[in-house]
Image (cartoon, rainbow, N blue to C red; front, side):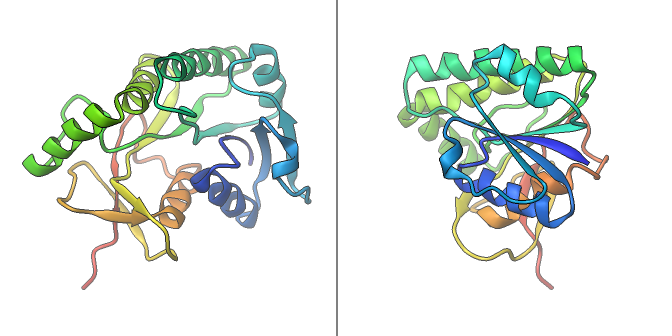
Length: 212
């Protein structure tokens, strides 16, 4: 499958790119600086951002799905708005191009109808919104944009993300108190959603795999 990856130079996006290539997918990476990615077989690099509609349309050509692992560059109102505008550009371009599958990296602090979060995690989300108001606001706006479209979207919401090797993950509708998940497992989950159809138009939490 040919997949467009946004945020491919970020900590999770870069791992998702590597995983997608390892799984045999052809990848188009839309990045601001092409020098940050090594050229290799199966990878096409396009310079630009989701703020440029023309660039997005070109990057989408021939793609069957999009993995959006983007976020605000800073905790500012300007970047909060920029991510919303960028997601509007992306979803509009996808609809025109007939690319229906969107897999987005979201976050546990993003509010989704029907959420089931432990009380302490609810309080933690309130604190995150207070101290990273525009970062959370940007991801909330992003979710509200793509969830209002007719696209086949899935939003993955990891809790606290940590470094370390993959240990296995599971997707769940209820957040587990104090859960931590590795970046490698989140990246794997993003790529797995290219073939996994169980979570269409849903926003599951990415949790560590239960151990016997």
